Image (cartoon, rainbow, N blue to C red; front, side, top):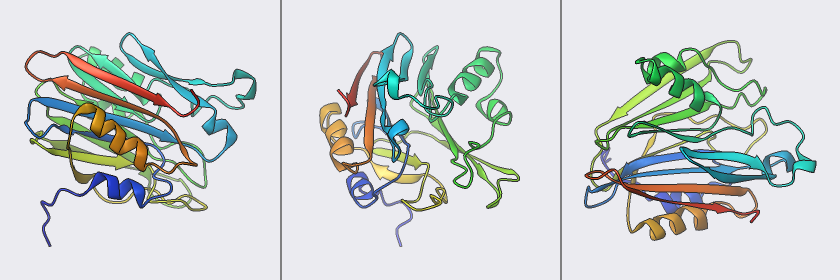
Length: 236
């Protein structure tokens, strides 16, 4: 067993009908750029009725058809926000919690101790978060229920140096199910390959066609801080 193997991200996605919401953070093969991707999927009409909208400091989710929006509490939020030269990416409104703590000089870990998994039993969807630093190193976190009843929160944080051609993939669910099984283990080590356009196509084209909703990808030049980003919305 090669514990340092970089898994095939395309295969992980194509073989999973419902990873839910997912974060990928890493570096390009030449080590020159950091890579961030965030996607959302959905099974209900309310979840599928969303698009990503560009904001000055990142992106937000928005109802594609406002008339069909039932409950905005867990689906409308800012998944990506920049703080200084750092970048926050999460699957919920904990983005704002992390930003507020960082702006006060506090840490990623301290901010997430004030939050827990989503109150959507029996699924108890975990909150997943990432923080990309200007040097290409990054942290990832998952907050998930400690038991089937949602009685307590288990908290896990992982810190990575940022290696050329290596990324880590963290998603909310193992696969589809009822209830939906929460992600287990540490973030999956994956290969980061290709140009931004090629990487974007790899992720989008391998997400389940029925369940995928939106994708955001950003490549940042680590020397200059300049970045490219793209958004794909199934509803547009």
